[in-house]
Length: 421
Image 1 (cartoon, rainbow, N blue to C red):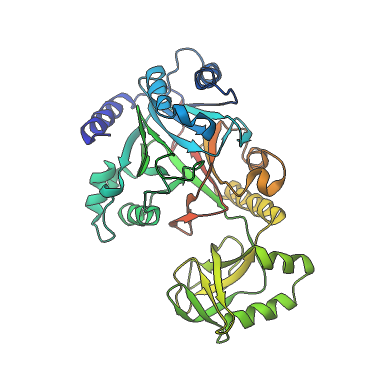
Image 2: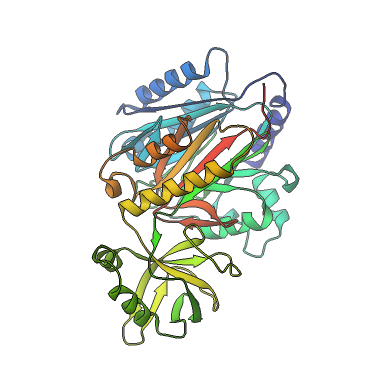
């Protein structure tokens, strides 16, 4: 979208969204209608009913399954016409999530709409060739996303996995906006470039990334469940070369892994053979590490002759690491733990709405039944209006830094900074 248009949208919202005596309202809906027009109409009717008469949404987030691929361009156009004063954002996905349900591998359209007094919404699209370089100054990021650090924004992000350097994008946003939440996901549901779609206002973009910076009377809390549990014991990387793990506690890592394997229960031994990961402790000074302190990364290969292991991340000597495994039970428990942690630390006004960015490797594929993560969230946090989709990768923070994940459920839990009557 042209920068001039985005600037006009922001100026309009900045002047229009600050008023008193108005209340935050969220609504969500999901439709399994195979015809797009009917799906949009069904979601619109439900959302309007929840919001109530004469309440106009300022934000509409929509996710469409691959079954609607032939009409992706129509979705943002129609929603911008239906809600002319709202910022519209969304993307395509292999499955969609909404209103407590998860629809996978079949037609689905999910939507969340929010009336947000006191909130400034700044939408943006970053084309692949517009991504600031790794050594770009914070000012370049400010110019690209159209919001200043002084506004203390939080970010919702959606990206095309085929064309966008997502790691570079989130690293740059962390550098420019170190205190801000960044959360979202990668569009899914296609195998070739150009077949996925990102929605921003009245436009469907086929590459890059789209986002919204939220500032003013809003807080975006994040809950990131990586779906793994630790096995064995924490160890130190004593020798590494980029992503090649060469020594753990001064021993060849394959030897360490074999010794650990021999002392594991039979069930964990089976998981090690096909669902093994390495957790990287994010705080190098923390001695007592446990679940939730690690960034989980894939074990991508091994050299039996040299006894070394390659990891899907850059390693540092002296770093604390621990092997992890993944299955349905551990994924469910880890999500419960992270939601419990969130409930224990959140203070202030209650959440009003949420977004869920869940890996395509979760859902029915992992748990054998639908709606698993949505039900856990509703049980822990409450029946908030929520929309989401199944992603090709999930964006979310671990220990204060933002990463691109796999096998994760990442939640954006959105609440006012101060209560609005």
